[in-house]
Image (tube, rainbow, N blue to C red; front, side):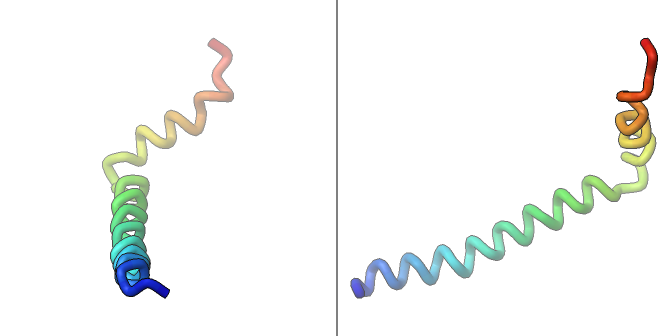
Length: 51
């Protein structure tokens, strides 16, 4: 196996995982932030409105 490919694959696996963990944590924090609850509650009731 080419050493350049192996180095690139290891870099992508390590930092790619770290990148996705950070993005997931940011999305989770956004969704669970207390000030967003009213906005999400309103969005959850939207399909039930009879406008």
